[in-house]
Length: 329
Ligand code: GLN
Image (cartoon, rainbow, N blue to C red; front, side, top):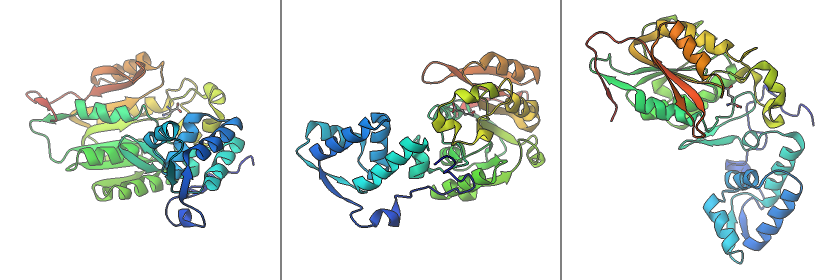
C-alpha cells in the first residue's frame, strides 16, 4: 500500500458526503452500547480516540457533544450519516497507510469553516487560525486608504487564509497566490464553497515572481511559508512526512529559505502603512525579526500561538507622515 496516494489526484480517496454516502445501509441508527463496543474494538487496532471520534464526526455526522451523550446514555439510539462499515474501512486504511484522515474524508474543519482538502495540498493547521485573528486585530483602517482594502495570501495552499480574509473583509480585494496547480485548484474550490470566488484573484507565482502588478499596493500580506529545516523532515510523523506535500513544509537547510524570499521583497509590495503577517517555526522568532529589521520594515513584533510559543511575526511598511490608524471595529 506504499504510495497508495496519487499526489496528482486532488479528490478524497473515499468521498463520503453526498451521493456516495447514500449507498445501501449508508446511514442508520445504532444503540450507544453497540457503538462503544465497536469503538473499543477499533481502538485496539491502533490509533487514538481523539482521531477516531474526529472521524465519527466528520464521516458519520456524530458530533463531539453527541459522543458525550453516547457515553452517558449508551442505552439510547444514535443516528449516523454513514455506515459503521464505511467508517471502519477508512480507519483501517488510515492505520495501514498513515494517510491523514482529512485526506480520506476530503474535509478539514478550520476556524468556523469546513474546507475541502486532498493530497498535494497542506492540511490547514490549527495554529494558522491565529493569523486571521492577528489580521483582524492589527489591520489598521487607515484614515485615507485607497478603498478597497487590498490583501495577499502568499502561498495559499488550500485557500484557508484567503477564504477567512475574504469573509472577514467583505469589501476587500484579495489575491491568493501559490506555485502549485493543485493548491490553486483547491483554493478555488474553497473560495467557491464560501461564495467569495469573485472577490479573490487566484494567481500562479513562485513567491513574488509574477506579482509585479501588486508593487506598493498591498495593505495586508499574510503568509504561512514552508519553514521546517530539511534535516527535521525525517522526524515528522509519517502521516505528515509521507503524505503531505514537502513543497509546503521544507524550508531548506535552516528552514528560512522561503521566509527570506518573502521578507526580501515584502517592503516593495506593501502600501504605506501596510502590514505583513507571517507564521514561522517554533524557534525562528529572533531570526525572522532580524530579517524584517534588515529590510527596513517597521514595528517588527513577535506573537505567540495558543501554546505560548512565538510563532508569528508582524511588521509594517512605514506610513505616510500624518497617516493615522484605528483598529477595525
Ligand atoms: N506547522 C506545520 C507543521 O508542523 C508546518 C507548516 C509550514 O511549514 N508552513 O506540520
